[in-house]
Amino acid sequence: MDVRIEAAVAAALSLGQGPVGGDAPSRLRAALDHAVFPGGARIRPTILVSVARACGDDRPHLTDAAAAALELIHCASLVHDDLPCFDDADIRRGKPTVHRAYGEPVAVLAGDSLIVLAFEVLARAAGESPQRAVELIRVLAQRTGMPGGICAGQGWESEAEVNVAAYHRAKTGALFIAATQMGAIAAGQEPEPWEELGARIGEAFQVADDLKDALLTEAEMGKPAGQDAAHARPSAVAELGVQGAVSYLKDILGGAIASIPSCPGEAMLAAMVRAYAERMTPVALQPVRG
Amino acid sequence: MDVRIEAAVAAALSLGQGPVGGDAPSRLRAALDHAVFPGGARIRPTILVSVARACGDDRPHLTDAAAAALELIHCASLVHDDLPCFDDADIRRGKPTVHRAYGEPVAVLAGDSLIVLAFEVLARAAGESPQRAVELIRVLAQRTGMPGGICAGQGWESEAEVNVAAYHRAKTGALFIAATQMGAIAAGQEPEPWEELGARIGEAFQVADDLKDALLTEAEMGKPAGQDAAHARPSAVAELGVQGAVSYLKDILGGAIASIPSCPGEAMLAAMVRAYAERMTPVALQPVRG
Image 1 (cartoon, chains in turn cyan, brown):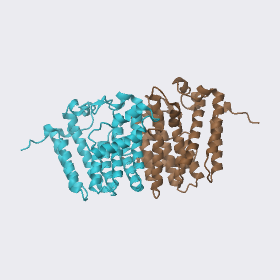
Image 2 (cartoon, rainbow over the protein chains, first blue to last red):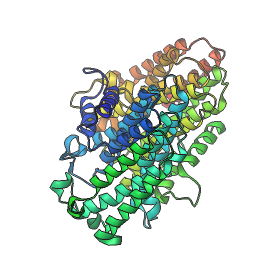
Image 3 (spheres, each protein chain N blue to C red):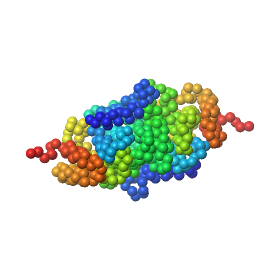
């Protein structure tokens, strides 16, 4: 667990919950906590902070706000994706989903509130760097909403004909691109050179998720398994088979490392991607070490 | 219809929809349009633009973005409030609600996308005034999310015991406060002196809505009537009776006019509040003119 990221997310959540004994409705207040803690792997904010560090991290409070904002958006998307009208999921991260614990109205509002809170956190962190804050908000919004963010990605699941490339780019790729670009912006760098790294990490996670969904059990994942096949969703495993998907995953990660822009922390970022590559490959498929 | 506001909202919507023939899912794209056009009275952005004009309106593109962003948030709240888990409404503004026309998944995503788009529009309008843009985003988020915005207001409807004052302040008042404060910020003024005007206009609209809900028919309102009584919701009519509520409405509007901060457009704003007062009182209850 990364203490810096947990602290940033906790500070953001406190802002949204308001003071204990304040004028906020208590069930929605509790639902926000339920949606955000305990977290999953916090992969997106970890990538964001890694890129910011690789670029010098000269405004650490802005990096913290960006990391928290990105994680809030991710948590909001999980709360809404779990709703009965989408995945109708009972379990998330090994405990009841928000709508199972607090009911559907509170779950819709918890997702809405977390989206809004993400932007509020960034606006409040602007301080002496309003230009960077505005740019962080712009990129986060672009990768969250329509026409190309995760809302668009989820929206493809309601279409009669799916543009599979656009679907994956928006549904999984968008927030990884936000991670690398927001890390760069928080540290005063241009976002454009960082798009490819985010896109490739996103593709890798998509393939890794497809592999996990096909190979692991519900107990191992902390959520229902075999959902891609059950919902006939496009999947790298369905398309390439298990070994084909594993080898595709390696290619993508090689491309990710090659795409890292020149910066002081270049080698550290390459090591990070390699570490993810190892964690992403299901144990059963990893080569036996000599 | 205010051409300036319709143009600003249309420009914002185009940004969210992306180019025709682009990579966005088409049903969600159409649902955004359905949620925003044709509009209702556009009261909140009209108040916002009026306050900005009263303060000099020296950055009109920022005022336009603020007006559009506020209206997008309002439209998003209507889409989500109409969902089956809340009001389960079939009709809004005389046509099917978004979930009736496009299904529940698309309606959830349309609301989410409109919320995100509101913040994107403000970030993109920052230009040479990033400090004002950040402040607009902060105020809009504060009045939309938790712990005191319209999400909190709606959240009170899921509580066993309701803090009625906090409920009304958040559910109806918040976006009117955003309207007056964002108008001031867009024109370079401090938001604090403008809070009371927004709060009082919001209270007045709440009482006027209670009166309409009690007195008008579904055909006259373009949405189901008698909902407060049906859902046993707190209402000024239930509390004070019809004549009592009408006289309370007049008191509030008098207070609103008295609260207008000193500015070049003070008299114009007072006239605007008086005009709303007349429109707000159901015709059957207006005094006969001599």
